[in-house]
Image 1 (cartoon, one colour):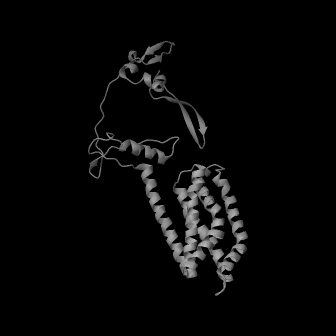
Image 2 (cartoon, helix red, strand yellow):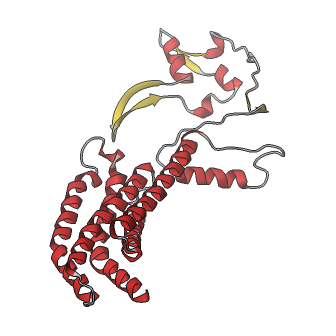
Length: 289
């Protein structure tokens, strides 16, 4: 009868099934409507050893005990921690719903405010740190290009091309239905370096072909024709290498899937941007000067 009472009040795990990468237990439990009040608990039927049903009040009594009060404070202010677990939804949409509910009139009494902590707070701190790293990477790449080529037009053209490649990451994440997370932002930072490397190869070839007083357009077109095949092969090889990870093939690959999708999205637009957009932008800046 003790086991039957435990199943009725707290439930018991009868079996389990596999769901993606974890094992989920199946809990057998009485309906919530049959154990919601004191009277329902008193009438809760239990099966005796001889087989007949006995109400719980025949063999047990309930006694209400009040717990010891505890006041939790943070920064000398009274605080109540409300926790929850998310299943079947992403963190961003859940937090958005919570903010909308709490922002509605009458949701909180006067003088009470809320702060979102836990995993969401850690995620926001990590986002700010990665955004700082992203900005620092772009600035350092620009300074390095200025030191390497001693030309503002070259550095600006390469940096603009890299940033445009990064913008394609948002389109790739939207098409695949993946939320922007820390892994995807790491991929955005890596795109800056990958596109810059390919652009350096292009301008190195263009600088070798260009002679003072000659047509700039001829050297740009010649460098594009000479470097098109290596750039295309390098881009295609990188995409094919990351494709299994982007398709989440293999155990544990879901964790790095946003990283692979972000890098592939930037590489897809890298080829036309480096071969067509970047030379056009460079020629326009030189002409404006």
